[in-house]
Length: 411
Image (cartoon, rainbow, N blue to C red; front, side):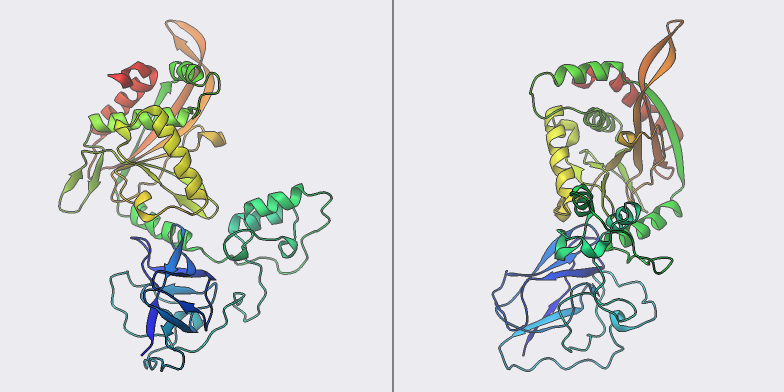
């Protein structure tokens, strides 16, 4: 009997996946380990591989379909072989007009299989049953509206021919584009990506149940600026950014204050001996936090190099699960956008997150005189179940001391 190909849990938090592209079609021969499709998870676009040798007899889930973990997407077997009989269950949620319930977790048993009827592997169908909708990321759609670009005439270079930000920018930069937004409906319903669904669930888990309080401090960044300028002389690579220095200082401060480098575990608090520092990276459809592991032990240049590589791979949706799961603390920096200060949402089970603002020049009083200095504000969001006010304040005090005297990082 033919073997089922199911939607696998390709990341620890994945509950459903969206089929982006089929690399093999019905009638194609495959071997165990061959990539047969690309699947969009909550964090990245990953490969779905065959687990047996044979021929793809039937494709059940078309490109663009969202399928719960454990549900069948295809069948592999011998040509002419009998396919498993369908279960007497309700149709797949993808075929029902009403909203479906929250998907089961990856470990939950699947009570029924979808009807194994052939579905087209091609353009995604619109909710109204019409085909031909342009596949584009939410950011690309927003840019297209702002710049009066018709998505239908833009060539997509993203997964499955999807139009992404760079495609809009390249189109606008081309000589004399003469397109405009066609008149029509007053609004557009943009499908929610797997990443945005997970972000929404995580925020609900964080903001409601976690008793959060916030601590803000300001650091004089003159010495960091001078040290950075000295380190970046000539053609030395990698170039050191303010964010690299803040990452290093945060990791060292966490090593000295393990009560902040901790997870809430309901029956106990887990204080980590190693500092695995997550850094929030904005991608087209949300946010992901790749991790610099053992950040307190790594030299500044290595943190700079690794941070850039992880950020580039995050934006390309090429991270693997072990690169974005297991952080002990997270840092989020919006300073490059001109944000002076903000509060960030804790990513449970972590007990804290540091929000970093821009380095700005302002007048301050130093030694009885008004002088102009480069300053930076940081705000720590704390889970009060783990971190008390004084505990968080002492951590920030250590962090500010390191930033105001970078040589302290060498001690």
